[in-house]
Each structure stands twice: as C-alpha cells, then as structure tokens.
Amino acid sequence: MTDGRPRYPFARPELPPPAAWLGHLERSYEQRWFSNGGPLVRQLERALELRDPTAGRRAVTVASATAGLVAALIALDLRGPVALPSFTFPASAHAVELAGCTPVLCDVDADTWELSPAAAARALREHDCVAIMHVRAFGLCRDLSAIETVAREGGVPLVVDSAAAYGGESADGLPPGRAGDAEVFSLHATKVLAAGEGGAVLAAPALADAIRAVSNFALAGTEVTGRGLNAKMSELTAAVGLAALEQLDGHVAQRRDAVAQMVAAIGDLPVELAQAAGSPPWQGLPLLLPDAASRERLLTALHATGIEARRYYFPGLHRTRAFAGHAAGPLPVTDEIASRIACIPVYSAYQRGELEQLTRTLARTLTSTMEESGGLSRC
Image (cartoon, rainbow, N blue to C red; front, side):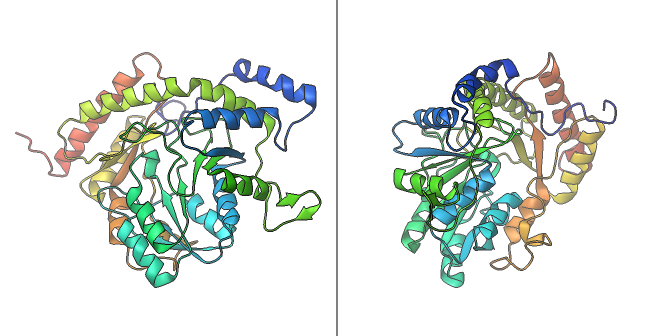
C-alpha cells in the first residue's frame, strides 16, 4: 500500500496525453462545432467502422454505453419484458428500465458465465419477453450463434452489451460488433479503448440511423418523431477517442501478454479460467475459485499485498434491492458463480518490474489460499 492506496489498483486508466488529442480539436474550433455530430464524431465513427469493414455495420457514437443501450432499445420500438443475465453490471438492467421496458433476470451458463440460451428461451416462453440483451461478461469474445438462434426462433431482437469487449477478437479472428441487431461498447476511462466517457453502437445502417435519431431527442427538423434522449458524444470526447484508437492495438497486446504471464504462473492450481473466450482485450482477469470461502481468503490476502482484486459482478442483480423480484425464477448458477469469481487487475502499461512482481505475488497468494482451503497437498 502507498498512502493507504493499493500499489496495484483495480483499474489504472490509460488515456492518451493531451498532446495526442488536442490537435484533433482544431477542426472543431475552426468550425465552432462542438456537439451534434461534429467533424471529429464523424471521423471517429468512420474509424470504428473501418476496424471491421466487411461487417456492413455503421457506428453511432454515444455519451456512454448505458445511453447506447437505451437508444438501441428505443430505436427497436420495444415495450415490455426483456431477458438479460442477472450476472452483469447494473447498467445493463438500468438501460432496460430507462428504455421503458422491464428486466427479466435470467440464469447464466456454468461454463461460459454468460446468459444461458436455454434460460433465455424459457424467458421468452414464460414471460413474453419482447427482446433479449446478451452481455459479453468481462469483455470475453465468444461465439454468440446459440443466443442469436434463440432470438431468431423467438422472433425477438437481440441487443448485445459488449461494454468491455472492444479491441478483442473471436476465435475465428473477427472483432466483436457483428452479433445480434446491435452491439454496444464503452469508452469509459476503465476500458481498454478509453476516452474518459462515451460509447459506440454498431448496427446495420437502418437501425444505426434510428439510433442516431433517438440519441438526438428523436428530432426530425422541428418534428418530434417518438421517444428520444440526449445521448450524443461531444467533440472533446471524440478527440480523445481518436487518439485512444491509435493506441488500442498496443494496449491490447500489452494486456494479452500480461494475462498470458499470469495464467502461466497460475499453472495447475485448481482455479478455473474463462474457456472458449476468443481473444479478449482483458479489462481484467476473472478467476473462478473453488468456493466462496476461497474467494474471500484470496481477496483479503491480495489486498494485504497491495493488489486490489475485486468481486465482479457481485452479487447477482436479483440479489440487489433495486432488482429484487425481477428474477425469471431460481438462479442457482448465477448465485454460485457470483460467489466464487475474483477479478485480477490488468493494465495497458506497467512500470519496470511491476508485471513480474504482480504475477509472482498472485501465484504465491493463490497457492497459499488453496493450501488453506485444503485444495492443495502440503507434501
């Protein structure tokens, strides 16, 4: 610890320095255009589209990923129950409510830690859900064809909350952004693509146009065409985003290398890692401990060494005051996974020797935790 603060905080934001983005603002100042789809917003949207030019999708920048989820749901003209996992960050369910819908919290799959296709299909049947919101847990980049099939066969749209996934790739080398009717990403300071705040939605052209309209008060000239909100990204945020995009590949490479070293150090310890997760950008490294007691011992021990690991997505939203009563039924897998997950900090940049020390400390602390839990022989 340093001055009461952990040496390795859970997040260490890595935004581009002012020198990297101030130059972008010259065009905005020249045109006196600082919001409402200015030149930098348009440039950033085009740059995001060009990261996956064959996807046939358009990018719409927004004030936050939460705002993007709300705008996508409104643009799809949804009213009614929406199925989503209880094992997620609260923003997912907040967006459903802000869009005028009702969250129906479903269980996750024990292997993927993401929305169970069977649970989603059951929610469509039993709760008359009008849409599905899938969440890429921890920014993992799995194949989502199973949940897409459930949505298609159920005749409902699928919105994918991919807040932490930008910069990742699926197992076949494709970036996220193609799944469902729309995928929504965050540019929050804690994300790998960090602009301080902000978000982006990738969707087919017609839906992207509708999302853009919803994000601008649903105005068409002087006519208000429907439900809307102010979800626009400013030129200042877009300037930071453009500079951040230039650094993205380097940041992702650093995080993947860091995770590879941590995983190698963990070795054969009885800790479960994310399976079939593609190549995520690794906002953090989730570990599934053998039981809840082991997780708590690990977190306490790591904090004592200055590593701020955390419980993440804990508790399941159905266990919170705001969303109690919204569960589709018993959610045993969510309760189990949420009680055992620990998330280890991963950074886009390390000072000399930091990664090696963090990795050694993690491995040593995990080993002692497993010994105390009886999961390892002391022989």
